[in-house]
Amino acid sequence: MVHDLVCSWCPIGYKNIKTAIENLNIDVDFQFLPYELNPQMADAGEPIATYFSRQMGWDADRLFSYQRSLVATAAKAGVEIDFSKRTHYYPTRNAHLLMHWAHQFNIQTELNEHLIDTYFKDGEDINDFNVLLNVASKIGLDKQATKKAITSAELSQELNEKVSRVKTLNISSIPAFIVNENTLISGSNSVKYFENALLTMINEPIAV
Image 1 (cartoon, rainbow, N blue to C red):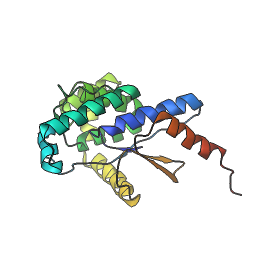
Image 2: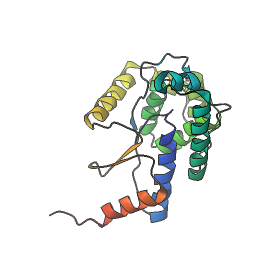
Image 3: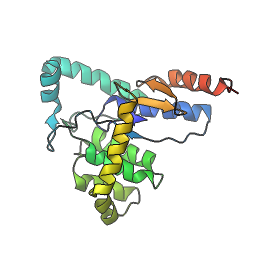
């Protein structure tokens, strides 16, 4: 899955494809690739209202209507978004570093779900190292070792290599799902859509 950790539609797509996988009872090696929507954003982040006004020219009424619809769509997928707490967008490189670090322990999925709650439900700053280290400790990672890793030049370079890989895929929007390394499914589609797409791939004849 190619995603960003502040992208509103990414957890919706994630939950829906995971439900589809469970419904089909298939084994999947689920991994994550980074896509930073706002790599130049200041560390303090930006109020969501300001961001939409600056980027899209939206007024408060239009933003409220969008957020109300988004919250309802997310709820159907099992994602809680609380805009009374989630007031800002934040840069996500630090969170992606933690996701990359978690890969070697095979706990990316668990970490992703904790980060979804931390940001979308609780509104915490997932660019803040203390917030990230608290999340890491909840899934069994040692805080000191994790801090050393995600602030290291080595891990940063490894993440840069993943970012470069994503750029070669020519993905223009997220979430995006790469299946069997050669099939791209874009968007936060419905559970049924994902089920049909996965079944089509499962039933495709193998080329010999």
